[in-house]
Image 1 (cartoon, helix red, strand yellow):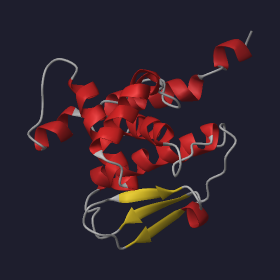
Image 2 (spheres, helix red, strand yellow; image 1 turned 90 degrees about the horizontal axis):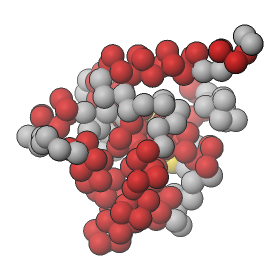
Image 3 (cartoon, rainbow, N blue to C red; image 1 turned 180 degrees about the vertical axis):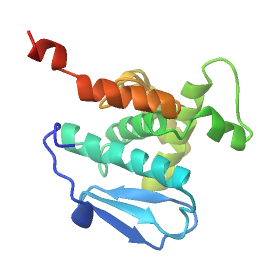
Length: 174
């Protein structure tokens, strides 16, 4: 976040609250605050995935001035990125939902979850949400910042983190 020009303080930008049973957390763009739903997040894996998802929204809000409230294409893009990069569509999660396939399953999952998130966040129709996702899918799906790769599991997440830490070192030593 700091490299994108934003600050994040645990005591200011994170809150635990009771939520309805539908969500695990959320990002409030008006206050730049991530809300963790203490009554629905019941294990560390869920917490990690949810925080990563919401931190991607915070990152997008910071670096791209995403207009969550008025621009459905902006909302679609950040939901695509969050679904793809947070682990929402990991093989283990999809198997636990009894949804898995061979060809381009990750993309299908990301599309479906982005559409559902848009409909839940702003009460758009399914048709409007699908249209917005289709319009921005390729560019937003391929934007893997700040990770540089899709962290499909803990090993690839660790590799992405190492690559992130080492960015710029080669040219800094020349």
